[in-house]
Length: 116
Image (tube, rainbow, N blue to C red; front, side, top):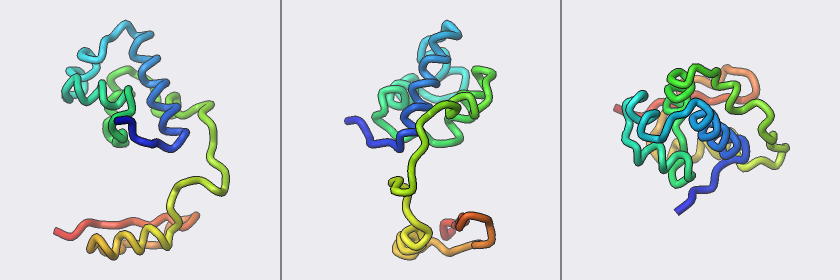
């Protein structure tokens, strides 16, 4: 089942697959290179799972491209994007038992930490 991704992420995932193919690699090569299963790369590229930023960074490192390359030229979201507001994030965090660590970054960024 395909997960619904933010348009920029969907674009970046497609670009990652293109870069991998241009490098002459199959999914198994990339998976082995970054230490995940081939199924993980398959799920990522077919958008059956939401990519983690760490996975995207490791893929870029392995392919020797900047993560910026993945997102360059991808459509931007407008003010009605599907990203939650700061209030929604804090409300969800409270439900999950997450405590707020800081709220001092520009543009309303919120840093959260999971309880131990």
